[in-house]
Image (cartoon, rainbow, N blue to C red; front, side):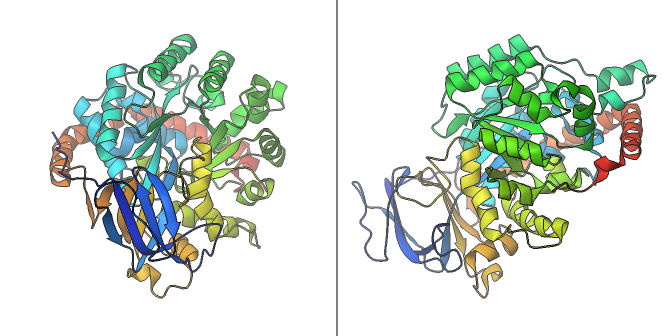
Length: 511
């Protein structure tokens, strides 16, 4: 058992003389301010020397001299199930990767593994300045014991968590329609894996929303149909109803791969071959809805999303590693839709680091168009903070260093070489920072990371338990590779055929 490290928290914190980044102010040379935290809220932001502590008792004073204070980063798209698969793969086609990484193919895991893998993703996130994480979780098995184990692990770390239970009632592999009809029966069973049931899955999700609500003060909920192409109309309509009843965001995968696009064009012809049109007809495309990836969205689909108030979560690192291409980033900006950023799975991004995602976002926008796009460092910072907050339904609580907002804050040490010399805080955050300069992380007014160590989790014991656990995980992975070898061959063949038969799907981008 990983024991929490002893730590006491003051009723108020005063951060003195830090340079405070506001996207509404000077993002290149932020002014020095004193920031007062009362409980979990930012109580005041004043010129140095003018801040007055709030509440009884002596506040904790943090010297912010030589530090940059930024809002905590928001990882709007992540799956915790495969954090232990970090570094297992070189770039792979999406559906091949899925056969080796998706939790359904691994089967039920021990409570110890559920806990350790959840802790790992959360601890790494905090270390790189992420204070809010959205875990789109495919529960295997889908029961309350599995769910409670994951949520309890998040509580240990102190991270703000937006949790969603990913559901589907159609086959998970989007490449399935393009696989040869004469594949062996065992391969067919794998590729056309038995789906869930809309009624029972929706009932389970609703029961958890009623049972848990806010389990530990930093937990909120979202709804996650795996993808419109993986869900029946009944499932999507049920998700839409739950969203309205509980006022929750809807987060789903869309147009991540060429196979998904080809499937939409061939199987949703009555909606013009468009999954966006299909979602709109179902009534699930609205201000609550944000799609992850959106690599192959067309101009017309983006315009419809903008009219409905829907948004996109861009996952540049996983998009590239799984050979999925680059989303139409300039079109996203020009349309005015809300854009958030995600780190996605550890097995296809290999880290939880939004500094990487921000840099890729800006640079890819320039590389694709080869001309001025208007996508700049400030856009990346906005997507990693306020954009993420809005996608997760938390825009009134987090994403800014502003009076009245939750105290989710990160202090970075400007002595780090990433900021030497300091020409632009915004640009150097996006283009130079790696997470190395993260000095202090505060979540909901609680200091959870300082001086290179987590304060709520004993990291030495954590690493010991992780090492012991990996003996079993590595053995099970070897067995999985052997078990999936035939399916991988047929999926690889289908992927190559799809690319050769539909060359237009291989374009990097459609502006």
